[in-house]
Amino acid sequence: MSVLPSRLLYLCLHFLVLYFQLQESQQSTADFRFYIENHTRNPDDLSRKQVRIYQLYSRTTGKHVQILGKKINANGDDGGKYALLVVETETFGSHVRIKGKESEHYICMNDKGKIVGRPDGRRQECVFVEEFLENNYTALVSAKYKGWYLGFNRKGRPKKGSRTTQRQQEVHFMKRQPKGRMDPLEEFRFTTVTKRTRRARRLKPNPKRN
Image 1 (cartoon, helix red, strand yellow):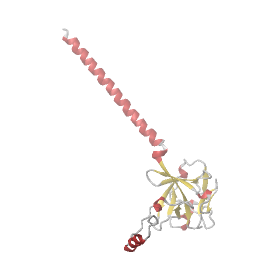
Image 2 (image 1 turned 90 degrees about the vertical axis):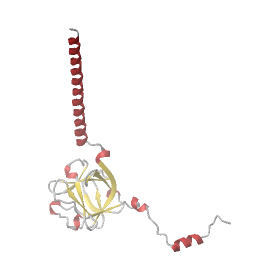
Image 3 (image 1 turned 45 degrees about the vertical axis):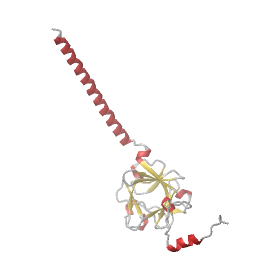
Image 4 (image 1 turned 180 degrees about the horizontal axis):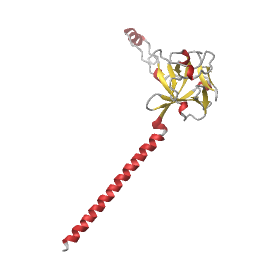
């Protein structure tokens, strides 16, 4: 008679342990899903973007894009403080946000295709997609308004996005390092060593010798 209650107690404890393990597993799954959703919606700066500083040379004006605040033009001088651009690039893909280092305003395009500067760059209208062209230039098309490009006329004034196409020179730009700054890739140069170079090195007098 004493064997039956002990077995029943064992079974109850066994089911109780299984119940707690199941609850813990469900809670871990829920926490993991919450973590994924939270980091997908609000990713941190390190995992979401890369920040670079350079200038955008306009093929049309021969000068650089500058963000003065709400107003934007392509008449900036090389090395000018308003021509320094902070470009935030998404880790995956070629989506960028372009902010003026001095003015702290972003380049945005509204629903009429007008280029304006805004202090808040989190809107979709402030996101552009880089398109690399065969002529070594880069075009920037709106991520929100398909087929509308960032462009400037010969006077450096912004061009409406609805009047732009990728083939127009007005939308062609070239990335440039600020004046006085060297591209990190150019710091590593290789010198070709020939027989004449080796001979010159052997014949070169050493000032330390007497």
